[in-house]
Amino acid sequence: MKRACVIGWPIEHSRSPAIHGYWLKWYGIDGSYTKRAVRPEEIETFLGSLAAEGLAGCNVTIPHKEAAFRLATEREDSAAAVGAANTLWLDAEGRLCAANTDTYGYMAYLTLKAEDWRHRTAPISILGAGGAARAIVYGFLEAGVSEVRVFNRSTERAEALAAAFGPRVKVYSWDERSRASTEAAVLVNTTSVGLKGAGSLDMDFTDFHPDCIVSDIVYVPLETGLIRNARRHGLRTVDGLGMLLHQAVPGFEKWFGVRPEVTVELYNLIAADIEAA
Image (cartoon, rainbow, N blue to C red; front, side):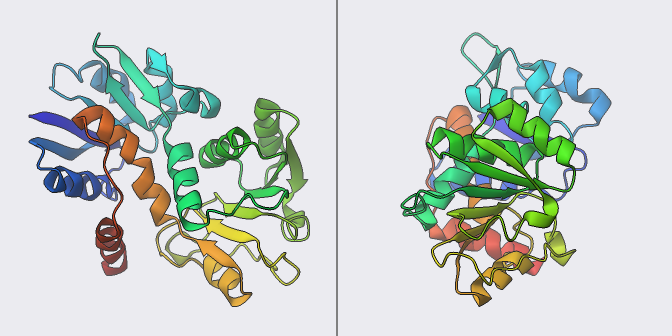
């Protein structure tokens, strides 16, 4: 039986077992996917014991993503660009390999929900400058976008992100997030503002281009304040749940040998779980 898991500290909140469990059942695979609470001081020992524990690999969540990247022997470009890994697997030689599938997950869902997002030659606006922002900036640059604008409360952190990716990434002050995004093709919130309804981004969408797509990677609740505000102004929106589902695809394929499909049924299953909670 093939086995994988998700690790973090804490880990109770993770919905990864529900996602992978759905696919294991759907494809009739003899396998398991569980949660493992791993303390920060235990991460190196745990990753070194994957083979001994019979694990093909694992997903990695807070606070282990940077450590997972550091401890991996082989790193895909997606992980190197972000400096963090959320997906680990053992290759045929037993080497620990790392990827960051947030880039894939975000771009796959954006393209699914708004295939025409690139039909205008316009900047992309990113709110936040953390690990998720790095993954998404990388995705847009790989897609050929000519300018990405980053807005963050800490200018220093935003400038570090821009320095890592080069001249196509421009840093703006947090106070400019609305007026410097009016022509944006896509605006993405990568911060935790709006999680469980807490806080507000105070975006003013009044003068935004009508074709702008507003996206939020927060998925609890499914309709965040940002998404609700954008819809009130007639803008198209992309929720955060799809990114969560699509980022799980590459890992499942690595561990269980089947590339799974993100179905409407799976989306509705996880959405119902979020709403019930």
